Image 1 (cartoon, rainbow, N blue to C red):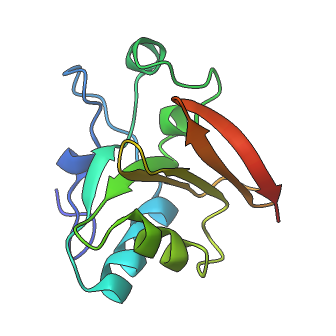
Image 2: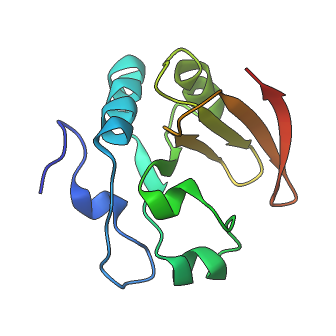
Length: 129
């Protein structure tokens, strides 16, 4: 099923093969807005994660991925550009930067914005906004 102009529900399904998919409409809208602004494709590397898959990949116990409010994305424009655009969107309150693995985590959590960088696969909080 098509969720927006450029994204379908299949792109957000759990990557373990369980077929589960939960995706918050606010997340789709935010990623679609990033796509419009960069005018380039975006790959959803990780969208929804079932609890089993989240544990298998070392995700946080209360991961936004398990709520359908987060996605790890990449694009040919690079993650620095993605991060710059994500910072301009008020609906994105979680931004995780992973230059080593080439993806940007974005989420639409409620509350204050938090940004972090992944260092050796672990999130190091840089700032609360």
